[in-house]
Amino acid sequence: MTTTGAEHQRTAGGPWWWERRRGAVLDIGLGLVSAVECAAEGVAFADKARLPIAVGVVFGLLVGSVLVLRRRWPIAVVLVSIGVTPASMGFLLTVVGLYTLAASDVPRRITGALAGMSLAGTMIVTFIRSQQDMAQGNIELGEWFVPFVAVTASLGVTAPPLLLGLYVGARRRLMESLRERADSLERELQLLAERAEERAEWARNEERTRIARDMHDVVAHRVSLMVVHAAALQAVARKDPEKAVKNAALVGDMGRQALTELREMLGVLRTTETTAAAPATAPGSEPVTAAPVPLAAVGVAAAAAASRAEADDGPCLDDLEELVGQSRSAGMAVDLSVDGVPGSYPAQVEQTAYRVIQEGLTNVHKHASGAKTHVRLAHRGGEVAMQVENEPPPEGGSDDARLPSGGNGLVGMKERVSALGGAFVSGPTDGGGFRVSAVIPARG
Image (cartoon, rainbow, N blue to C red; front, side, top):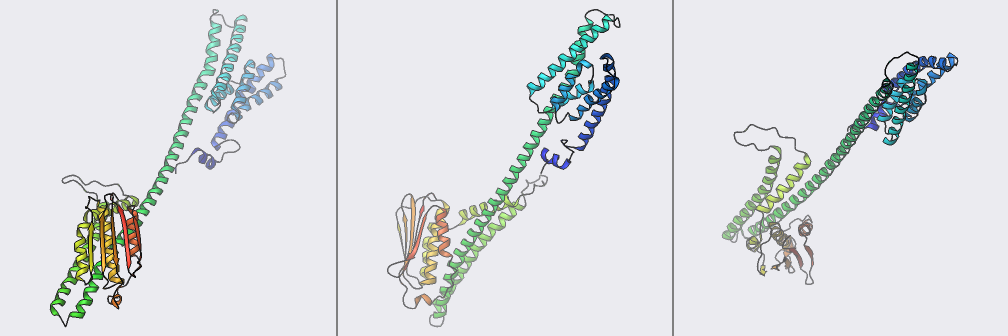
């Protein structure tokens, strides 16, 4: 964090009203010099006013020491300097007081009024003194000399400290404004970084959920079919060797398909990680040292890249015949019906519809082995609807496969459908079976 003015004041720890100790030392030193000057000028003032010299010295000391208060009460210092102008006293007091007043945050109309009073007072006193010197014969010049000296002396005493104070004050206010703006920008950047980290964490969690859901879809369906075929292989191995060979080939095909889909998902993760870690360089060009990539950006990029890769390479509704055929080859009686004219759907819509039907068939393999199943797909223009409904399983059919269940299949289907703005319903039917239904907008 940058150091603001308020923080700097707290760390400096100056006495009384001073922000810094060196400021206090400077003001006290100027006060001492001004007090000595006014005390010396007080001797001449006492002589002309026919007062005791001690009175003039004490008066000068008091007037000059007022300069110590210039940072606290700059208006009072200037007023005192104006008040002692007729006594020809307080040159340093006037100059430093006007500078401090112009550099402070006092309204400009007050500064202008006090500067004008100081200018007028100095001009009048100088004019009167010059006339007195010419009348006494101390100066023998033309009549033009008196007003020239009065104007020059008054401007020389008033204008330079006033202009310098205005410049210093404007510069100080500009620096404070820039410092505050820098602090504000730094706070905003820190807030943006925190929000980016939150979004990255959300994206990572979403990506973990998506990967877990896809892994569940792949493993649950393929492995369920493999277990069903393995059970059938065990049952017919001795009685029908040809059918056993066929079932063994199907098990091998299922395993290879599962491995292929798993490799595709893992390959997406490796590709995303490599892309985020090593920026590409053009052939023949010098290697460029890339700026460090925040974890937030990497997390969001990984999620986006993985989602795009899945959208490009995932299954679609055209693969339903193959999906249903795999279940039929495992011994399930599956009836597939498609209504309506297929439209041009986004990849995510087709993948979600495919995964819902796939998970519905997997649940039938797990919990209602041997039950007749009806798969319905309807294209309704603005939406696509799907339903997987199985009849009650035959006696003893539900225990043939003995497949474990993690209870995440229905949750994953609902998450997929809800993410695209669709509706998902699942539950038992009146006839003792189970139904899974979903409707997804055509635009996702």
